[in-house]
Image 1 (cartoon, rainbow, N blue to C red):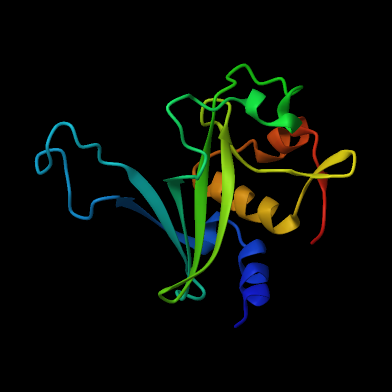
Image 2: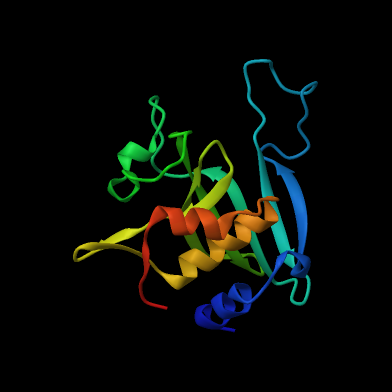
Amino acid sequence: MNLHDLRSAISGTVDDDWNLIELDAVPGADARSVPASFEIDTYHRAVLTSDVSAAIEWGKPGQRVSDDDLTLDDYGWAARVPWADRRVAEELVDVYFGASLVDRVTILVVDGYRAHLPIPRVDGDHWVVDSWHVAIARLVDILSGHTSFERYLGEAGVRFGRP
């Protein structure tokens, strides 16, 4: 299987096609086994049930991390969105085939962690999102228990770019 085939296989799935697993950033750690000053983060892994070689992980912080909270105002495309909670977080979505990390996409968690969205890029006078980024953000959003992805994507006012 090549990367294009893997992306196509993942893009056509729904939540029932995945086995969801909660993971600790420190395997086997719990609040009793680490110092109080050490934070235990949880992230998520989902394995495609029809081909257990394919898996995704998300919930790890993205590259834009600072002491200051990121807000929608840090993203040019989001100036006019109607969401009351302006805070955002970048999260990594890692795509695995077997033991190999084969792709990484950064997505946004918006509106008080109510939705996951792809990060648009500028194309001429428009903000656009690639279909793969939309598919992976939609999947993560659904696997995270959210139900309003299409509404949030529409309110973001972005266009679809290349497939």
